[in-house]
Length: 257
Image 1: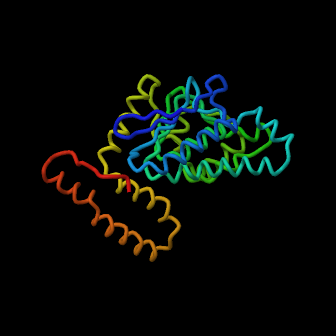
Image 2: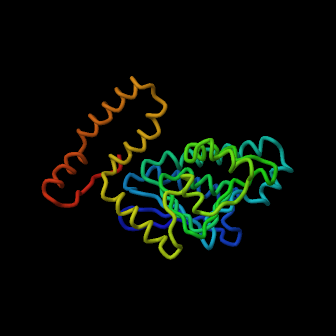
Image 3: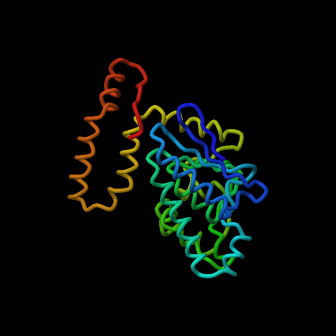
């Protein structure tokens, strides 16, 4: 379910509450379609991902997994590759992606949290990488989970498949904030207000830097980052930001990139 708000913010809601928003192929396909459409939205400022009902996302849909086990390898590979592509496309959005974790986030659901730039969880949320309990591994989500919590923390989480409370997720770095359920929307709004005060083109550049700089050697990183900053100084947003600072007003930003 897609909901557009003022200030060009979009909320994507996983809408299978009776199934704890488990990722059936249909639901994953709908999410993939929505994310693809958002890549072409030049007015977009932020994306909020959440779940309908009491859960964020229970992970993969068991019924569809059963069908995949009974099917052929090519179908299983296709589904895995599509989900991997969805995660990559969500990570590559040029705007901040905020996970509003309203309840349990297990397996692929915890993977969706890991893809987000900012993750705020309700105290009622639990998480766990439960795939080994049904004989598989958290493979497609592992690059994003390892990036968020590190290999040392992932060892215990992956190798026990235990469920943990939200506070443990906060300690390990899966979540950025944990708040009472009644305060979840206010916490999300606070983050969005901070995002909207920033230049869209600067935030897009920040996301590119986060993705690119760790892959560069030091010398290349120095050249690359200097060029990025020089390019940003030439943008309308830089001129507007400086003018707004001196005039003591809120900037009127142009576009996302």
